[in-house]
Length: 296
Ligand SMILES: [Zn+2]
Image (cartoon, rainbow, N blue to C red; front, side, top):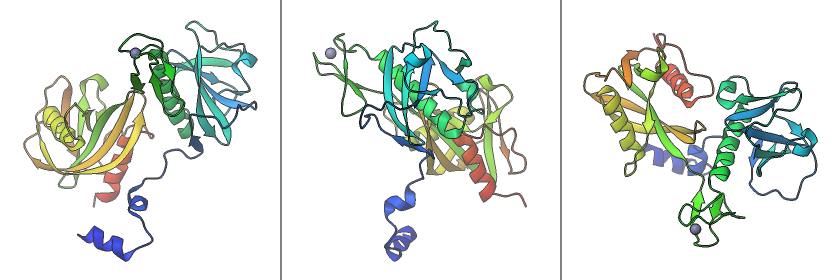
């Protein structure tokens, strides 16, 4: 195998070093246990259901202050999230109907996709998942007793029956499928005229590669080969983890159901329709395609 030969030639490069993608965060250090109770100002990711508290006057847009009482807010629950730009970060949720402090508003996180700094958007996505998990696992799903938060891991433990519940993730696959230097893009019924890549949730009992093959067959009637892992990205709407792949066309003719998928076509690098938003892993896959399959 050529990759093994290269590896032994370069003894300084570990396997991990070769395959590890750099952190998606630029200025964030994760942690769920504060070293000590920090009394200095911190970033507060505060949610009122699906809406996040935005400070209209700050560049970061995330409220930065010592504690919620300073803003007359009374969070129901608070979670520590780590450090952003050397400052502590907390997530919290407030009672429905809470009015935003002066100069701030509660805004739907999804609508802020292109307005927030990348680290801030990713952290807000992490925060809303932690807040919802904490809120929805106050009681044991097995025996109904109140749960306790683990000191060692992101888990809720039932003191009565010992049942543990972890924050739930729903992994999904998204694939760039290539044929004769073109990429396959499909129109999903719910997204109107917007073209996207083939994607779907992984089902119990299948590998990620099998999910890629099944979704492609179900959505566009094609078989694929040479399925290769590309990268991953957390996706907080509502609790997904996107696993991106590249694959080559193997066989079949494009066939769509006209409902879930309303159309699918092969596009060359200079024909690609509206590209997805800059932060999505779909746009990274499309950038990879354009770089590797340039139009002559
Ligand atoms: Zn229990």
